[in-house]
Length: 251
Image (cartoon, rainbow, N blue to C red; front, side):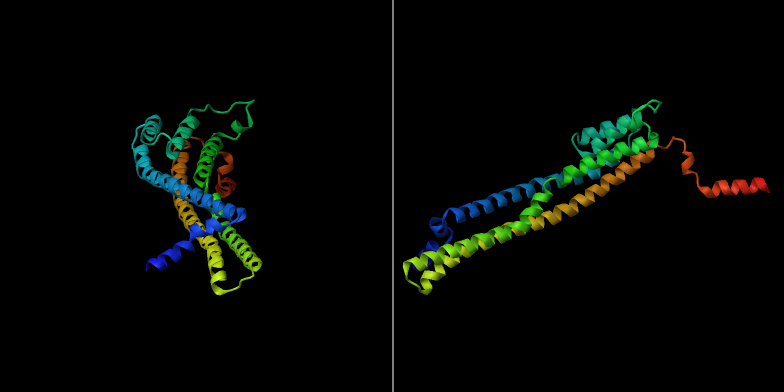
């Protein structure tokens, strides 16, 4: 038993690291760095998703229970000062306080009151979406490239091992199995790095989509509240109403 353990220890990762050249070591360190970045993003983004889900359960209810928009924005800020719901509420409050457009005006104020409000809320949603999606491209890249990085390390390790065996002039199963088996460790490391990255990417992508839907519904309700007293533009009048009125007048 002890002899078997000693043999395994002599042909494991430590033996691979001892016998590896600079290219193999650099490849292993790259995989280690990719693994560290992957788990850092998974843990931080999962914590962010958990926090945002809690905000989605609390902030909208507290917001719409307030008497005024100022109180609602203050409640949202009190529950989650740096949360996306509080930022969208602050943008909505700023949009309500923005004076009506008068000529001459900048381009953003010449859109009409309803379009200004829609534009402000849309920009707030876009900024929040960028924050939610930050880091996901790194996870996708790691999941797609880590197996090939490990495969490169395997191919290079096998080439290096076979070269040493050829130079020694001794070809036997024990001389080939050890170095080749150690080189295959790189493939296993590449897969071990890629699998968590792919699973984490899929989980976070779905979780971000759910949160984005919650934010979109919240912003839609805010838009409806802010334009409730605005007059309906002439362009929004349905053509059928005018046609009916003209027909009645002609009769």
